[in-house]
Structures are given as structure tokens and as C-alpha cells.
Image (tube, rainbow, N blue to C red):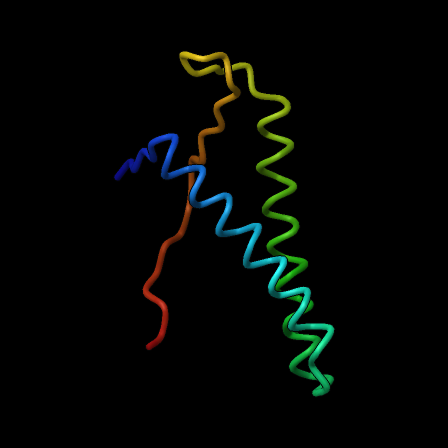
Length: 84
């Protein structure tokens, strides 16, 4: 199934990701438990990699929207329900 996000939805998702990673950095610096801190760092590193991939794809994209902005198409995304 293809899911297409509007510009507003895409912007909200980008902002949420950046905010979450920023909050994660703060939480890492205030966490005393080494194992928990390492788990948070691993999550932060993974999200940084995702953001770098998306940013790189944007920089290399030849596809443009109606206003000339780069368009990135995510062709595969595994979306599963999070545990309650």
C-alpha cells in the first residue's frame, strides 16, 4: 500500500523526529544507568543515520514539487504496532 504525506504532514514528521532526537540527547546526558544510557545512545545513533539518509536523498533528488523543492520518496518502510 502506498501512503503519501502532504507537505504539512511531512514537515510535522520531520519536526517530530528532530525534536525527539534533541530530547533524547538531553535524556542521555541526565541518565546515570550505564545500560539505559547505552540503549538511548544506540537509538539516537540509529535515528541520526535515518535523518542523514533522508537528508542525503533530498540533496541528490532530481524530483521537484510544484514550488521547486526536492522530493524524496521512501519506497519501503516497515510500520508495526508499538507495544502498549
